[in-house]
Each structure stands twice: as structure tokens, then as C-alpha cells.
Length: 556
Image 1 (cartoon, rainbow, N blue to C red):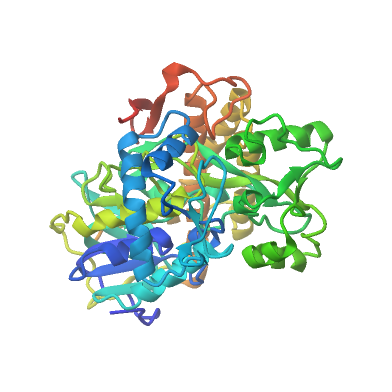
Image 2 (image 1 turned 120 degrees about the vertical axis):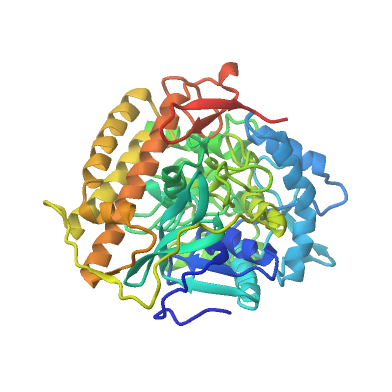
């Protein structure tokens, strides 16, 4: 099997494994699963965009003689501000060099310096250990993996298919409900792997694409999976900030090669930080926000003139091209930058085999919380985390199939022409999503306080309850496994918008609950009303449907 005709409905199964998400985590999962397994790869996008593809900086791994796994682990633990699980960190740093070799065999052509792999320095690393492909590492990785996935036997890859609900019976995952073209129906599987990415697009200012809205996390929470550390969001200090232009990541590697942050007077806004421009991202982002607020400006500058122009042209062609397309002269004038939501350290809690608390359900990549990142991700560790934990899928434990069957194609689907209820319209739903993103940025962004978050949470909960009364959403949540519905075009459009808003409201409320629960500041979570780290909070936060928020100790 390979990429099939998208107009043909997906076979009901049973599938051995359904993988949801086709970024680096999902693609690598498909390649690591045993070749004899029947695998379905679902990609919500019809395009080739994913957060992985947008990653510029690189992949962290020890490849130089003077570096060591111990040093990589120490840097990871330090960046994680006391919340990294040591067993997960050990697994990451020890398997990382093997994953680099695996990627090279799969066709990943890292930049080289002579016979050696080229490496760069990024924030909070004590050695140059970040491998790269110019400033397009994520794109190069995804393209190399896609080429191999298309060749994999027993795999069907379908684009434009949305997972709408997980199939849970007796606390076990047996498959997934999908919106497949005009059809809303169920697929049975022995295991489901969520690789849907993070939630950066919950915020108005973000480096993430629109699909990074926490949808996989919402599906997992609704199913009863445990969620951890949602309060920890990494805000990248240097996203392009230009009137009328979308946020665009200016890789930390630019500062690693010598670029410096400056204000309008040419002074450094990070001079008080011990590591200056290469201090941990949360510290740099807060310094920039404070300077911007004090000076009454919307952005600061990133000065590339310390980097030789020839070196910059070779190393950062995509960044320079994008800036020039927007009328900037990046090698002679500072690039306007400001912090933006970039990476979610929290997610669906997993063990070292990428398994959740629900048998049959796994999570890999940014949607997961493995314990590697703690309160603040070390640069370059996220793509490597995808590789290391996807590697565990080689020994995946598959469950049995459900007793109930799914809808059979020999009977006609039930037609559905359900309209939006009340005053809601496609326009009002779209506007509500934009308003929610602005609210999250203002109240749960770089600086947070209890008053603003409590008010926001109450408002979102009210809106979430209101949207939950829409008949279309009730159709999804109550559809029996043996039923298939065929939606008309308007109904399908409206359902997609309802799901977008509903999942964003749910994940935003879970985020705010976690932020309010942790009454301290640590890593990517900073509260102006509780600005210090507290020793009693050196624990992971935990959320599960139907239970009060709780904590768990850090693993050694």
C-alpha cells in the first residue's frame, strides 16, 4: 500500500496500528513499526506543512570526541529547572547518536565540516552539538522520512483526514473516529499512536502553523488519558515581528553564530543575564518583554552584523530570503523580533515506551510529555525526542480487537445535513477562535497572574459549555461504532469549525487550570504574582478527566 486515491473511503480495518499525524514523530513511528504490521497514517493536512517542517535550528546529539552523553544530560537537566525525569533524559542522550546514524541511513544529509558532521551552538548547551541542514533542518528531516514512508510495505497514508474521537471501551483504546471526506465513521485498530504536535497556535503570537492547536491532547483528555505539565510553554525570544506579516521564527542558531539582541539605542536587553544572548529561552523572552514594555515598543532588534556576511548567506539562506521578501535588509539592519509561543513542554503523559495510561494508546513528539524537557526544553532536543521515542515502536505491544464491529460499506451511510444551532455561523466561529488566541496570549503568555487567568478560565468554560450544546458536536460524541454518516459540504465545513473551536477551548482551559495550579515560577511558567521557584513545587502537575489536579514526583 501507499498513498491512495483520497476520494476512496478508508477501509474500516481492522488495522494493526493507526498513526495520527504526519510530522517527524508520525513519520518516524511508521518507519520503526515492524514491517509486517498493517499501518494507517492519517494526516489532517492536505498540504505538506507541519511544525516539524518549520524547525530551523537542528537536532541535538553527541557526535564530537570532546563532548559526552553526560554533558548533554547535564545541560538538559539544568535547562529543565528541576523537573526533568532523569531516566527519560538518559534514554534520550544515550540513544541520540544511534538515531543520527539511523537518520543518515534513511537519507538525511546533515551539513558537514570536512569529514565530520557540522555542529552549532544553541542556548544552554555547553558544547557545539546541534546538527543541522543550513536553516532548514526540519524540512530536510521530514522530506527524508516521507520518501522512506512512501516505500514502506503494508502502509496506507491518507491526507485530509481528521481524527474526531478515540474509541475507548473498558479503559482500552480500540481505534478512532474520523472525518474522512464527507464520511464520519469509525476505524478499528489494535493500537493508536498520537503524533499530532503541540499547541503553539493557541496563542495569537506563535511560530507554529494553524494545526498546532492541541487537538491530539484534547482527544486524549476526553478519552481519559493523563496529562502532565501543561503550564510549561516555551516562548521563543526571536520571532519576526513586522506589521502585517505573520510570525516567522529566527532560529536561535543565528545567535549561536554571533548575532546579538539590541534595543533602539543599540543596547543589549539581555546584558543582565549571565549567559547573555544565549541564556535559556524563558529568561531571554522575559527580558525582551520587560524591555519592550519599559520602552513602549512592539519589537526589539536582532543584529546579524557580527556574523561574516558570506557565512550568514551559506548558513541561513531561508531566513535571509524571507526577510528580504518582506523588504528587510537583514545583514545591514537589525531584524525586528519579539517573543512568540513556540513549544509545549507538557502533554499526554507517557512512559519510556511512549505508552499512555490507556492500553492501546501511545503518544510521540510534542503531543507527549515524556519527562525529557521538564519545565523548559533544551534547544535541539525536540526533534531528537521524536526519533528516540518513535524508536520504541519497534517493540510495540498490540492489544486485541474490539468485540463490536464497525459500519460495513455494503450498507448506505446515513445522510446528515445538520445546521448550526442558534446564532452561531461560520463567521462567528472563526471570530471566536481569533478572540480566544488573543486572550491566551494576553493572560497566559510570557507573564501570567492569578487574577487575569481566573477571569479568562471562567469565560472559556462558559463558552465551552455553550458550544458543547451544538447538535453537530453531540452527533460526533454519540455516534455508535456501527453507524456511518455522510455529511453535505456545509455541514462538514461547520463541523470542522466547531471541532476547531471546541478543541481549542478545551486545551486552553486545561492550560489555564495548570497555570493556576502551580503557584510558583519555574522554567517556561512565570507568574508575576509568584515570581520565585518554590521547593515544594519540584513536582509534575497532573490532570485527568473527572479528577482534581494533582502532582507526581520527578523520576530519578
